[in-house]
Structure formats: structure tokens, C-alpha cells
Image 1: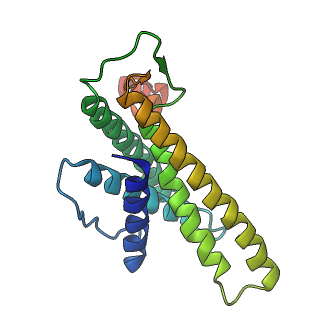
Image 2 (image 1 turned 135 degrees about the vertical axis):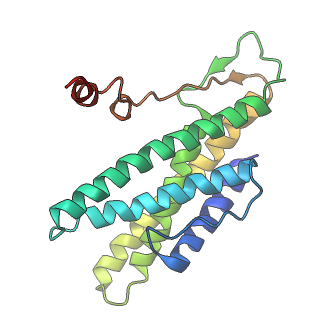
Length: 202
């Protein structure tokens, strides 16, 4: 398990989504169920669908009811994304469960899976920025600006890949330890969102 594997899976997922390029295209899981590869692919698929839902909802001519439907889909997608990230963290936590943590070990500011989450988003940004660089209907200045942005994204991907690998190595050697926190999104919980639980009282 390393960040290069993540990048490979995320790149494959983004490419395969665009073979159909439809937000309602079914997920065709290429990896064995329960594997870390399957978790990573599923997580990136959610991100990719949501990327395109976010594009659709920004149409200034969108029908209000269609916009509301899309907003609800985005909310559901955000919860699915969080669930998948937590599953990845749980997998990693179990993978490293036998590591002897050193007395002076420290905890990271974010869990490995939330850092990996940013790699997935970077894969999407890189794919779509490359598409902008390749647009034949855009002027040269637009393509030049996009090429500059693409180089920054590629540098971010390289730096984040290195940082994640260093974090995983530190965890594997007991220099850092990890915990699995639950995001506890209150707005999705009927018992915690006052708009929802007050309606149930009426």
C-alpha cells in the first residue's frame, strides 16, 4: 500500500468514468471486493461523479426543481465520500495494528485516508485541466494559462505522493500512530439536525 498505487487506481478510475461520461453510469468495479484497491476505486468513482454533478448544478439556466434534485444527490454523495474515506482509514488501521508504537511517536494532523482523499481530487483536477490545455476551440492564452495551472497540479501531486508515503512509512515503523475518527455529519442525521427532528415532532 503506497501513494503510487493510489495514483494509478485514481487515474484508471477517472479515465474509465469518461468512457461513458454520465453521472448515472453504473460503477463497474474492476477489483476484488473488500480489497484496498476496490475501496480506492469506489472512493474515486464517487468523487468523479460528484465533480460532474457540481458542474451541472452551476448551469445558470437550470430548472429550480432539477437543481434541488442535484443538490440532494450532491449531499448524498458527500456522505458516501466520507464513508469511503473512513473505510480506507479502518483498513489501514487494521493493516498496521501489530506495529509497536514507539514511546515518542506522534499523531499526524490528518489521517492517511483524508490525505489520500486529496490525491483523488488532484487526479480529477489534472485530468480536467489537461482537457482544457487540449481544447481546440479555446484561444492560445487560455491554453497557456491552463498549462501553467497543470504544472502546479502535477507538482502538488508529486509532493503529496511523497508526503503520504512518508506518513505511511512512519506509521509502519511506529514513529507515528493513527486513529480512526468519524466525521459525524450532523446535517444528515435525523436525530441531530433540528430542521429534521423538529418536523418529526409535528
